[in-house]
Length: 164
Image (cartoon, rainbow, N blue to C red; front, side, top):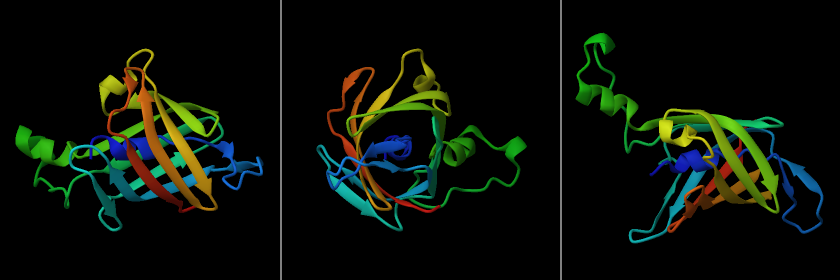
């Protein structure tokens, strides 16, 4: 699901505009979990609970972090990690991602800047991702918009709920 949950979860938008239009700041600090992923493009589809794999996003005043499993099923557990083959290690670690860093909020947007990530490409100098956000109570929608490379051609929308 192409680093999708990364999006969600890269959502460190801790102060956005209230969706009701009242303009009151609304906090999204805490812990969130993606419950639905909507993909666009040549093969559009929506994946709902329980299909989005295990994931959590954590948000503080200035930092975010997220971890997720993106495999279609359970990951294998090698009998001996020290003796696992390259293929076995790819099956275990390939569908796992994680990232943490800082963020900035704007007009119903959040821009994340990774400090540490499983994917070293996400940590390159100047790397960022901007998402549109919509917060309604304890439900949060995150829509990919652009990266440091330009606009995202087939944006993914994540729907998350507050778990703490």
